[in-house]
Image 1: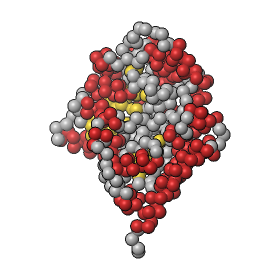
Image 2: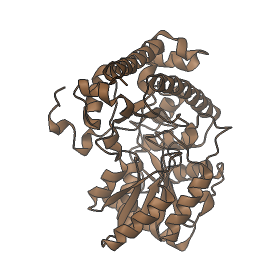
Image 3: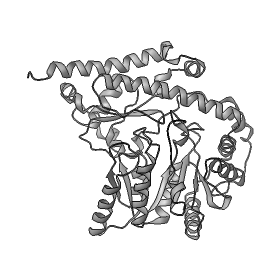
Image 4: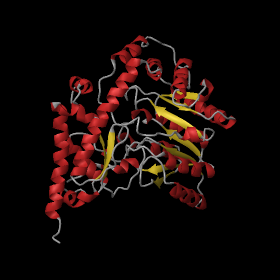
Length: 415
């Protein structure tokens, strides 16, 4: 298989966005946005009081007390991470793999991002022993690690880190003098919310953790960028917030007034918002389970998805079959599966994983249909997996992986 031109692969602007909801925008959210469309004044840097108060209420309902002077809003989590990295200085540690946008924000400032292996049971955060070893090695080589970014509910692996692992990792990071940024974009998308325990690092060590939440995870369309950050209630936290506000002001990174109105409404969690979120999470969980069953049944490896709208698949066991298609690394696998499935299949190298590892992230949004009518039907159907558009998409996915399994068996050497 012939590679496309390199220009389509390397630059940051070609990196994958977060997994799309694949659903029509909630009518009441559209109404709130439209009602605020005639606001001509610019929002203040860091967010208007109404949005910040809504963010405080959101976190307080989740056991994380927050006050307006400890919260900041920005047009998306990337802007917040850029500002945090600039404010804290030094080098940054991230898990391998991690969200596709983390490392580019760090490197944009000329800082180094060091990837640390994750534990066997989950992604989203470094193995604590590997973290300690990496910090010591970086310092021995003249580096200056100051920040750890992690996500307890993770993109790309769709796993939720067990509380004991979170505890060990965060304690190790703080013990080495690192500030922790907890990206909790996906915390409200747990597939089994009553059976899965999600522990925020800010619940453990509130003085050492800044929480970032991008509203495109659970509440808003990706095209309406808004995110909020909660800082420690300490003198150091106040100083960090002030420096972050300086960076956001210098960048002109303000949430547009209509989007801020929609974000504040969504964070208030009225009945319509919570009902839509519950239905959307349930739908994506069902589709993710079916997709996981299909890829594992064909011999690929994937942890059972626990959150979000995606799963992370390792096709290493099918390498012999992929070699026949001239697929030998994650970029070639991305090209091959994107063409074969007719949907984005970003390779693991986009998330800091090894280029030679045959891993991809698959989203569930593209499996819901091609039109708003088809996607909306998925939300209201008691049996969405039986709808024709979902059946077609899952059948195509399953057949693509089954063909690879059959090819691998055909090329398997005799024993």
